[in-house]
Length: 376
Image (cartoon, rainbow, N blue to C red; front, top):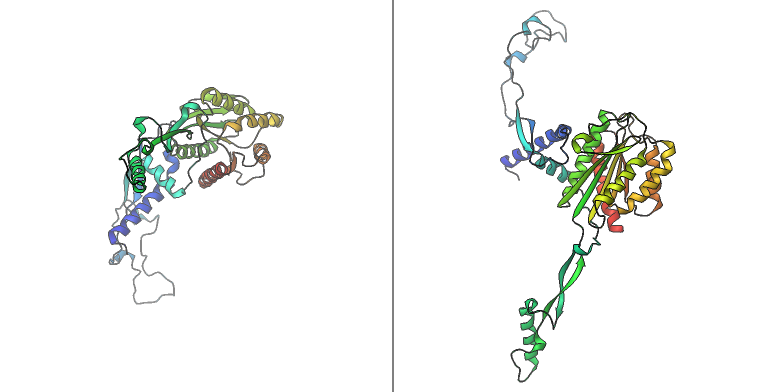
């Protein structure tokens, strides 16, 4: 049985979380929020909760009763002045209003709340093949070795066992010595490289960009919870592809056609030129409205086949807020075909039409990537 104070704390915590969820889009409007979110604070208005109590009815709300002629349902006296009446204009009221207070919360705390509620699994890092990423671990004992690795406790145990079966034992012999052995094991890569690619053609409006930015933001936060060092790159494309800083990334717009192969080829160059796939867990997240030039179909598929072998995961989100769940688009068909070519292919596809779809896509991607890594 919870105490009253504990129940109040739980109610307050629930209200704060609800307020945060309703305003989550406002938290990521800054142009550099993806890479500089740490240490920032935001103001969240929360409705004040009161304890349940009995109170007298306000006399002004009484309908009243009297004598005289009347019809059923006839209001004898209005309970409150009606909107538009002269007596209600320009006068202060005595009714009780709603009280709100403002909390200043760290973005890191907000992200922890949201992430805990989604209960996402941990990502599986790939084993590093770089020689300098190997580590020495203890494994077993031997009768020969460096003096610094002498296991005294194990040596004493061996001596005790030997003396127990000998008639005239000596305290220690060379056969009693036990040295810890070290073996070289490959350790998982602890660095991550995340490439965000965005279609900035004319069909991607402000709503589409905000949904893409929200998905990118939370995908990056999830990866940062798994790896101590995360590098990012921001690519955008129309008929050509460019790399931008984060501040410029979401402000970029274009009017040309859509040629997705250009951004996949640029992503391959950035990944292999800047981040060694043997030392980095590589992730690519691509957001588009699904349109692509018909003549670019084979080029896009070829570029993706070249890019995906070095990736832990490729997540594609199709932003279609005005269409909802729509039929397959050109990009979704290309990625679906690639996904079916190989078992456990590191590709995930999701459609986003609203803010709620962002959480669904994140949960699906993280669960899918974890399952593929375990099956590989």
